[in-house]
Image (cartoon, rainbow, N blue to C red; front, side):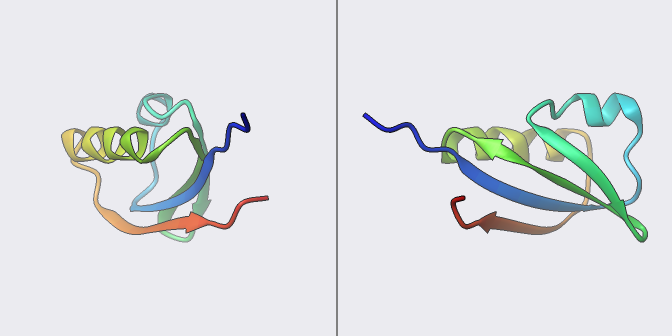
Length: 71
């Protein structure tokens, strides 16, 4: 059985500090202009919803969410 992962890029407003970036261990952070791009892989949509809920709890402003094509 092949295990696939889903790749995402999530753009949030502002520059995220080290502590907030640490809340998203599955993602690599990259600053682009005034925003931060979090890029990484998750096992399923349920994990994505968990990440989005955590972003809401941290009062991060979601600007864009992109599901990337598989490798």
